Image (cartoon, rainbow, N blue to C red; front, side, top):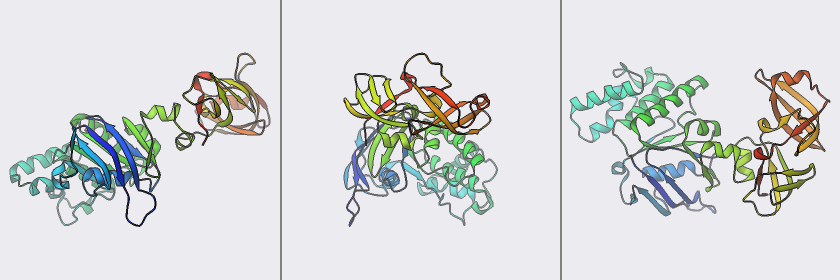
Length: 349
């Protein structure tokens, strides 16, 4: 297992004003599964290519277990990348594809054959070694590409959008497979994705990147419950925001004054944020943080009802119990409560 550290890692392509990646600092613990998350063009794949040795940084350093690998060529670095489009050799059999890395390392044929069969078992595709890649489905080809990467026992496994080309049910299967293999082998793994749900379901920690700059590096649940910025909150599905003035555990807003947890945000202008599922719908008239609102629309989803409500010309989204739809039709008035422990205070943009 290998600890991966990125220190002020930067990439500035020629003839461009903004760097593709600007001073990225990450400390990825040995054996962790980490996600580089962000919209297209944010620099996440650039970072991965530099870790793999495909692209040289214009600044900063990359360390494996404390040692810089900048001067180590890609083929000897020990970081193997599985590309989004798999890049299997179409004229080779599946077995030859999987064993290609060992063949280049001049491993003997009997050992290669044994290891190939082991890898095919690992990715749950035994018995396909004599087929051509064109005879496999997209999901199966993805597994073969993964097996080809794992057979050389890399220090770092890099996955570029590993689930993006798969149908929904195959994504679930592949997610479980990647997680299971990663845990079994204990290999430090980094994957790139633009899908926050995928990152949350798969990663131990997430590095959120916008426009080449690291925004936040945390465990998945923190992005939902304690985002650092308004932009991070929105990226993770935040929809309820109210501007206000924060001081000493209270925030004054056009809706009234709310008790909040103490925040690292400086006193002054701030944003109150609360997730739709954390708002208490149909609250009684007792306690703090109460608001009276009007139901604008509702959608019955089976296990819950999704409401859009308006309070003093401000729209909110609320997720409530499914049976509440019978008591609160459109245009009805409802009390809602913002539980203090569920409120998050953010700095203004």
